[in-house]
Image 1 (cartoon, rainbow, N blue to C red):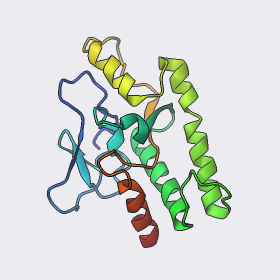
Image 2: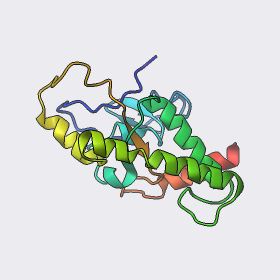
Image 3: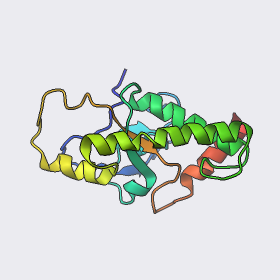
Length: 180
């Protein structure tokens, strides 16, 4: 099984999103659940998981946030976040809307619980901003300490897309909600 760990290394390549040129047919290599829609460094990813690997993308801090969640890997988090956004969309809402009830309210509360894990990231590394994390990693030696990749840091998709098409994720979750 491919690793669902984000590419947060000090790799010299730019970690940005590219649309798939072929029709979507394969699954995301992170969550292994949704169909891949984009690639980052040649790795096919769904729209929920892509921000965890696209740390050099302009606007990454508006699209995602760092959280501390050691008991879930990035792929499991991606599956959960997709389900929460789709549950809210199925009721015609987002996880940020007010006055929700039923499944949409449950999705909002679960998402807020995940967002609260930002405090753990702030406590552990001093930031919840993916761009600062990536910038710091670029300036560190290749292996600053043993097992550095085995942390509880995860990238939480906020529910919107990058500045070139900010509604892309919202539109996708609406489609997923209709087809569920």
